[in-house]
Amino acid sequence: MITLSSGLPDLFIDTFGKDVRHVCQQEKSLLESCVMHDSIAAEAKSYDMFDKMRFQAKEGRNVETPRNDVTTQRRWVFHDPYHNAYQFDKDDDLELICDPAGETVKGLHMGRNVQVDQIVIAAFDATVNSGRRSNTSSITWASQKGDVKYTESSGGRTIPHDCSEANCSASVTGMSTEKIELVQEYFSMNYVDPSIPIFGLIPPRVATQLFGQEEYVNVDYNSDKPLAMGRMLKYWMGINWIQHPLITLGSNNDVDGDTDVYECWFWTKDAITLAIADTMTVNIRTRVDLSDSQEVYAHLNMGAIRRDEDKVCKVECQAG
Image 1 (cartoon, rainbow, N blue to C red):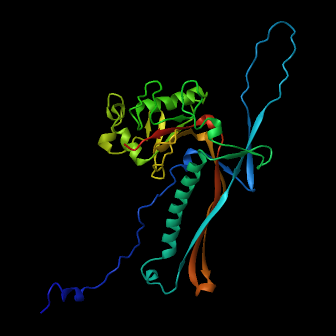
Image 2 (cartoon, rainbow, N blue to C red; image 1 turned 90 degrees about the vertical axis):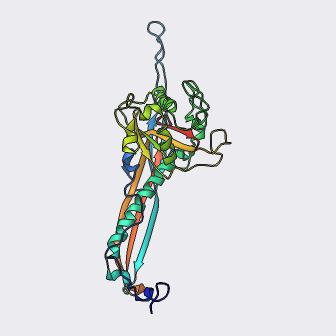
Image 3 (tube, rainbow, N blue to C red; image 1 turned 60 degrees about the horizontal axis):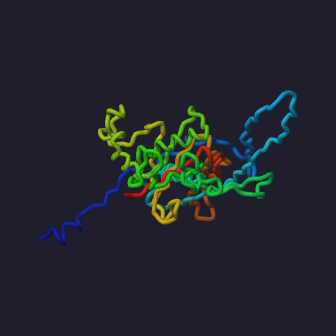
């Protein structure tokens, strides 16, 4: 007699699917199209910028011509290599049901997209090398008032979670319509060309906070219906919105150093440059030193740089 608890399982037959599926991964880079691209074929590459120029009053006739030297700024971008490889033994059972090399290449492309986004995100507040030579001096995010709270006159580049500037209420510590108004004000105060697209990078929790904004979900303010779609709006209040799980909650990382916040970045496309030495190369080869195993090797080499602080700002958001 066969019972369900002992005998029947012995009659089961193992079967295998004919394809391999990938776990949920990032299928494309979310930030690569939101920054400028440049090729790099050296250890480092420099970018020169003219500093701001202004006029002075001409007081009288035939007055002495002003004598000024043009001041410039040079910034350097560096790039780093990244790689990985996977091997498949000739006797792997997996090879009986699919070609593992093709699926591995697909998975490596997904991994590459995550790496590109990590490089771009790091550039928002990274230290930038400057000067005539690449190791002469540096420009930090903090030294450019990146850690100063934004007000109409402060020149600060951080809109704090407890902002009480303009229409903001300090009690609203997440993302709000009023904070986004200040983002637009920030770019206007810095003479940023309004025709240049502005991007906003937020984590899923902050995207959820937007659904609590009346102006976001009410069709009296918005022609789209995010609640009906169940998806974040791609474009709203003049911002191209990007939701990314790579933005995580920090620890005492607000501008005052005493509150856990998400750092949400806003920038224009020309504010960040992605310098590419190798966008990605893949080599599928036979490893004679590993019993003729098949190896998939992938390599990329790139870096990113913040070109202009006036075109980047940060909004702090608490999780609650």
